[in-house]
Each structure stands twice: as C-alpha cells, then as structure tokens.
Image (tube, rainbow, N blue to C red; front, side, top):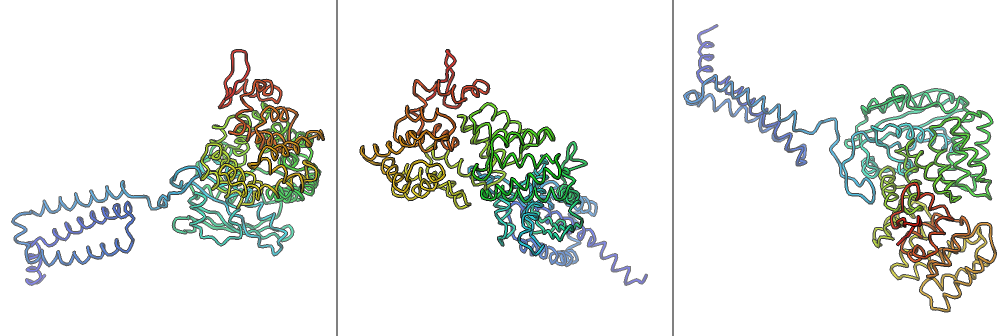
Length: 606
C-alpha cells in the first residue's frame, strides 16, 4: 500500500467518516420505518413516501461532505464507540417500531362499509368473500342454469365454514351481467375478496375456470382451470373450495378438514335436473314451478336417495301455487323423506317450518326453524324466514335481530329489506321505512307496493297510496275471487279506507262483507286487514279466527303493528290466541313482546 493510500485511510479514521456514515444510515433507516407507520395511519400518498426516501439518499452524500470537513470537531464531542452504539440503537428502534406498529402488507386497508342497511359502518373482514355468478361460456344461453348452479353450490359450501364470511346469493347474483368495478362490489357486499370465473359445458365435458381477487388492490391471488366430466362436478367444486380456504388461510373444523363439498348424488342427469329446478325456484318463476316439480320428480326417479332433490321439491311445494301443481301435503312428505335420508338438511327443516306456519301450527314452525338455524346459521334465507316466523308470533325484537343478520349476509335480499322497512314503519321512522322498501321494490319485489302505500297513508298522501294499491288489489282479486267484480269493487273499497267519509267507509265494509258471505275455502287477507284499517277490531279478530288466510304473513305482521293495537286489547283476544295456535307457542317460548301472562293463564296484550 502506497504512502498516499495510507494517508487517505488515516484521514478517514481521523474524521470518523465511516462511523458518521453508519450513524446516518441507521438514523435514516429508523426514520423511514417511522414514516412508513405514519403514512399508513394518515393515508399519505405513495409518491410522498418515495420523495422522502430520495431526500434521505441525497442527505447521505451531504453528511459525507460535512463529516469530511468537520469530522475533527465532531471527534472532540462524540467518540467512535458512542457513534456505533447510537447507530445500533437507531436501527433496532426503527425496526421494532416498523414490525409492531405498521399495518400488515398482506391485509387490505380496512374499508368502512355498511354491513346492513340498518347498521353503522364496520370494517371489512379479511376472511370474507363474494362468489359472483360464473359466466356461461357454452355458447348456449339455455345453459345459464348450469353455470349459475356451479356458482351457487360453491357459495353454499363456503358459507358452511364458520371462519369465513360469505356474501349471500341474492346480493352476489345482483351483479350478474353488470360491468361493475370490483372495489364497488366488494364495498357493497362488505367483502375483501371476490371469486369469479366461467363454466364451459359441452355434452358430458365440463371446464371451470376460477380466479380469486383481493378487492383492495385488485390483486389476483389465485386462478386455475379445472376439467372433468359431469360425474366429476362435486370433485371440481371441492378442489375450488379447498383452494379458496387455503388461500385465505381459513380455519376448518371437523369433517371440513377432509371434505367441504358433499356428494349429493352419483347420477349426473339427476343433478342437472336439480339445477334446472333450482333456477326456477331462485327466480320465483311460478309459471315454471310446475315444470320444476316435474324435473325434481325425474331426478328422484333416477336417484331415490337424492336428499337435496327431496328437500328442494318440498320447498317448491311450500312456496308454489296450487294452480301450478303445488301441494302442501306433498311438501310435508318430501321434507320428511329428505330428513330421513339426511338429518342435516336445513332446507327440509325450513320447508317444514314454513309449512307449519302457513297452517297456523306456530309451535311446530318455531321448532323446525330453530333446527334449520342450528344447521345453517350463515344462510340469509334461513335468517329471513326465522325473522318472519318470529314477527308473526309477536317476537318483534327477535325478528328484527334476525333481519339485521340476514341483511348483513345478503344486503340486497328484497324480502328482508321489505320486512325490515315495515318495522321502521311501525316504529314511526317513515324515512328509513320508505328507503328500505323502495330498495326492495327496485330489486323486483312487486308486493312492496303494499308497504309503500302504507308509508304514503301514514303521511296522509292518499292519492299516492291509491295509485300503488289499485292495480295490485285488482290483480290479487283475480286469483282470490274477492272482491267480486274487482274493477268496480276495489275502487269502492279504496274510497272508504283512504280517508273517506262515513258513506264511503260503509261502502268499503259492504265490499268486505260480500267476501265473507261467499264463505271461501281460503279467506282473502284483505278482509281482516281491511276491517282493522276501518277501525272494526272485533270484526277483524272474528274474521282472522276463521282459519288461515291467503296471506297470514301480512295479516299478523299488521296485527302486531299499530293498526292491530285495538284488536290485541279486546276481551276476546285470549280465546283467539288459543284458537289460532299463538298461546301454545307462547307457553313454550314465553310471552311476545307486547303481552304478558295473567294469573289465570291467559295472555293480555297492549
């Protein structure tokens, strides 16, 4: 080594250039970690962070120059050992702060969303997902039922995992065919991840392509294509569901560790028929319900042990209309068959619960719905029907809790929006009621017109209420044959109930009396509802006691609202409660919200 080189190193040591460089690098490193934490907390733009890092880089060379010219003065105050200790402390301190105070990179920044239209904002969970309807790539629009079915089956399988929040079917399928930004979809549904894909079905061959996307930054976490035959669909669904839970690091328990998707049937043709019937049920296409019943009967002939086909047939018979082949007795038979084959079938329990409620066996309905809830706690439809059964039985607070949970899972579930809006209406919050009921109407629930009319009535806008009710009541009268000649008698009824004078009210009562005089097998719910509206509570109670009406759900929903106040307070109410089956329910589960049990064992309501 030359004398010149030796002199340079001596001067570097003298001015402590190495020590100052290390101290600056440590300080800069610590400050960058602090800035990283602060930037995340206050949402600083990424460009600002980059500019600050560049400034630190420039500052390094400035430090070298200053150390060279002022190193000897610095040496008088700071020793080499002190500089090294200071550098070490700064580096360690910055590293600790960065490790424990920053937001993990793998987790998307929490976004505030409304988990339910009735609730406040809540942070989106990392382990949450929406399964969008897969695109039909078969070239045949008639195959949509199959691609939709694959999406729904995956959604249902994932919904059974307690460690994973899954958006409900109705809300996810709302975005079918819409070119919405994934961030908008994620925010609307309250999920951090989205599964989308496509299905190509050609004869017996099936190809499913799926991809998992993190909403926060549009990152594709995983994608894969699966090929197989129709006989392989459950394995394909299992592989996709397993990949999702692996990617999201979901905790699986019990049988889920080995199987997420149960093999419902070994007969591909039976499964295809099941998916076709499911499509008709999901769309509430009542004119196709007769066909759907036929498809499921064929599926059961191909595989008599296909429990889910029995359960779906029971549900179609429960919700369908007699003119399209629906039968209440067949609904119960099919549900029981399904449970014999698979005691864990929640849909069969749900069908039994709804059927019992339609027949005013309220206690049986509650028992069945509680069983369905235990089997499928994350199913929005089960929560909705549990809410309806609770509210019909007078347990309004419980029903509202079920509705809020249903809407947290499935924010665009029309019937849940409509029922929740009714509860706002009864509470006097007309703005919230109108907002939610309008949402349900925009989502295709035409019966929401009745609820919108009630909001208008509460506001004294009888003209709007008449506009909403007239076409609906005339249409409904055609199927119920009440009142006769609806084009004439429905306007008479509306004249009396929408702010009419004594003569108009008498005309409305005459219309309802004519319905009663006809002694129909099933009384139109319009009759007791109308009598309550006309302030004839005793007559309304007597009419309601005749037997199940065409719409007991709307009748008893109104009954527990302000309009039913006088009817609930009548001396004959305890006998009515015993006759219709309410008392048996209350004896087991306790009095409803506005009632108490007297010493004599009767229920007194306010």
